[in-house]
Length: 116
Length: 111
Image (spheres, helix red, strand yellow):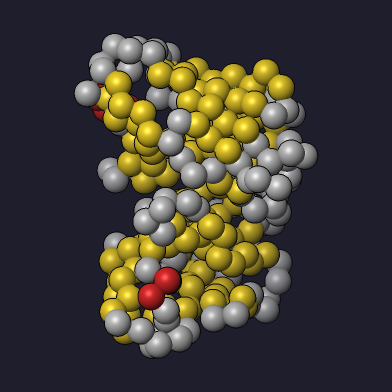
């Protein structure tokens, strides 16, 4: 399997612009997670899906952030409008057994976002 | 709420020596799993080792082993015969209703 695939790997944009990050989970995995990593806050869970349904979005910082999973093989994380404090590495991860579970999280390579 | 604490922001070890990274956690779950993840400069997160809380035996994966002290809620990672490729950030994680990650320990391997 190709693993979790994220795009773009790097994104530089200006404040106020819309940013869309994309993720393709590992085939057969029924859980998908979006994390944000910064030096200040470490790894933060933003949202996770089970069978394409959002289960917990309490980590989404504010209304500027939204995430969708229209099918089992694709998810997006959108920031509109973007702000400099959104600069971070955004990871997508997938798993076969969810949070309480036993399965390991398989991470993508991350998308490094810089908002000027 | 669950928390994972890594009290060592940075560690260093001589090549071929042994190093131990510390992790403590707090959970109200009775059934949970513990993980160590490695993040090299490429930033890819890679699973190093997994421990089931219901198992008393410490997990081992080649040069990597854990010291799991359930009563003390401690889960340290020992790296034996350290290699240059072990240099990375190491994150401890605990499952509950989600994966909880520590803040990481940056490991430097000195040739």
